[in-house]
Image (cartoon, rainbow, N blue to C red; front, top):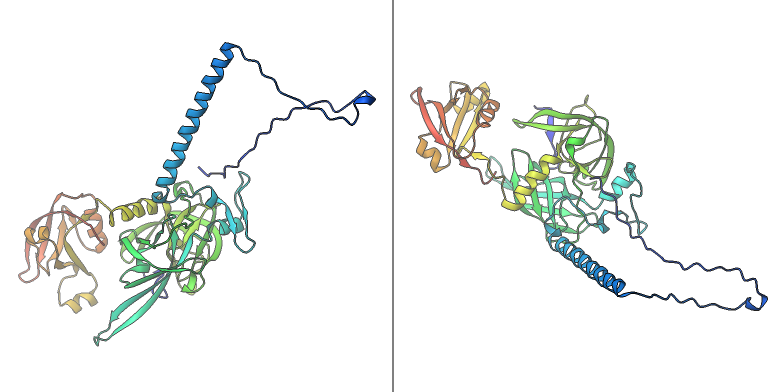
Length: 423
């Protein structure tokens, strides 16, 4: 849809802090002294213990059990410390405090009630970052120039992994991440997925404050929605609030069907890749788009975190999302007369622009073939093509009927699907 915009290129469980409790054993003695001669004197009290043989044996057993318990607890703690850096969407106890940097104090969630907007903002202030990009563009006169873009990102691990939108960093030659403390780092692209519009970056930093993943499936219409991001590419750390307006909203963006959360919190260019948080301060969505127009207000959308955390883990571990099929073909949508005339074709449809893989070449595809059927599904649009391949998996053999443009001949080809390892 033309009225849904990504933001890029300058336009562009509920855990409580565990509190330490000190136990003090007090030996109570009477403070009343009836004898005048005892007044003002100090008394010393000694605790005397007498054990039988059986009591001594019991004491030894208790000591052994206590030692074992402490040893097990120490092992668990060591395991947590050693593996903590690779745990996405979690936060250590010390980092779970709400940092208020301008006062140098911390505030902890002390009750089971919802956090205030102020507390949610403080809790996640250090977890949302600014992203700036540079891309080299060649115009029609073969002149090159640098374009700049901006967006937002969310820290998902203490050792520098950051999730954002694919469209924020797509085609960028340089990506710069700036933290709330104004420290900037050049980021490395770990992996990206254009299908879900999610990308993972890595910066060379430690001790960061990651967000805590919430459960987007538990959201209800009317729940609090707090958005933190970098609107206009220059207002990092901006906090806006509203409610969850709708769940499972089906939206088509750039020809891709997406199921998104809807919010009425204020969202502007540069918010893409930023965080949407619930009443517990947990991340429940990554901002992706809003409906734009002079007569449109309060229509923002976010990718549910349950999808984000799964895709982000795949990208961080493998650089791509495993199990995605690859046709080995690049398609061009010529379903409009204007595009068809530009490419010099007489029939509207989805065409093969290039044959990229050995599997596709072996199947006999040629540039210029019009896709007529995939299996038993007739193809009339890009959405048809996408949905037709949804039921197949890597390694499947698919019967595809094409119309060969040069002789208008219908051909039935068999394509073996490969695995997509990059976007």
